Length: 280
Image 1 (cartoon, rainbow, N blue to C red):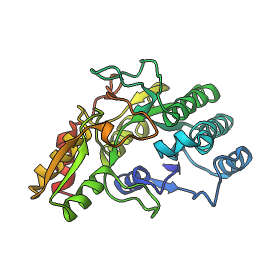
Image 2 (image 1 turned 180 degrees about the vertical axis):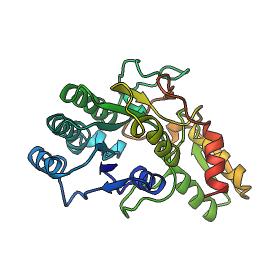
Image 3 (image 1 turned 90 degrees about the vertical axis):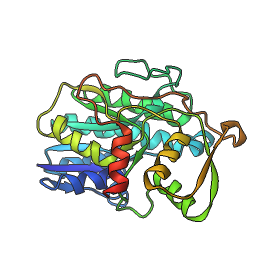
């Protein structure tokens, strides 16, 4: 199978290519095709003899989006719509990745695919509007929401550092540090997403619509950091920090666990994390 990946040099795109080596990949850089230019997107897709298109590109600077949402709107809302329209014209499957931040975060028990989004920050709003654009322009499209991605490094040197990388860096320099003790969501290993993507979307296509794909369970940032240092038995003390001690421009959902009810859920986040840290 030949797969076109937008955002293919990021962490998830790199994992897909590394884990699913049976496929051929096309992954243009932003210099090769500007996804915020509708004509450029349409022309590029029309020239590519691929079997499926997966959009992983996203503007994910949550706080910066709060100050200036222009770029978030262009990349997260408009661009997915352009890709969806082009895939409809070419009649090829389209998978678009989204986020748990489309939810407001009031459901402690977590969210299922049919729950109504209600984002509380500009980034989340741009992603939700992107979902709507995709489903409006391509009735056969697939939306996959996920959360808190981590895993092996991305090909792109500009890729955002994962929380695991940040904690390990702090642990190598400090004997003690604080981590936000709020915001419950699921850390998700990109390798697990790649394998699930193969099983449920590439081996054969499911029904079009919205899907949730994250490791099972949930934790706060503090609990995640504690689990990292405990697994590796690192000699460092992590202390909980109230989120109000370091206020940020954008609000975050307090509870945004994603439940998968349409495909088999992935393994628990603790199991995936342990496997990644001890058997990289």
